[in-house]
Image (tube, rainbow, N blue to C red; front, side):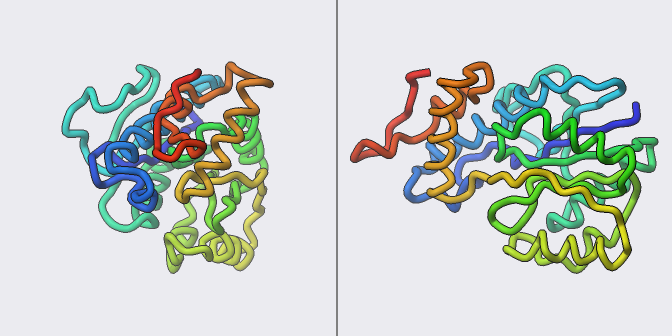
Length: 234
């Protein structure tokens, strides 16, 4: 095994997920949407086949009930390290490279429509470069990849702020690390992100129905109605 694709996600627990969307979503709707995002993300990236590729789901904490998430058998499950996001990411990369991984890519569970080609591009770019980054529209990044342990990438970063991407690139430039930048994408954190996701799903239904995140499509609140309802037309 030389490549590792990891997904970070919060454990599905009522009142602890998608809190920035509540309101307007209820806690129950936020939980349903979060669970759908995680499951569709895993199914979506499960299409990616590469020689020696291992797939790893890391949850924020152990699930209270193993049936709370449907995880494909091809994914190994684990729990994130303690601490802030930087410490969690640092632990993943440090541990991965210590056990023989040569190319490691990590994403969150809020981008279930990232084209699979982007993941292939990330791994391919790591064959010659040391760092690959997928810029997020909120100033962070939706994907980070490395082909070696670089602890500085996880130090002195204002995690959760719009400066994450800029600060990470500044570190890479200071260390003269070759960086490959992927296409920008978005996370599902704000109400406007839900509207953007709805539009994308509508486009995919017409152009590439096999890529529609079907659980998300069913759990996505319908903003056309006076009350939030579930869109189950797909």
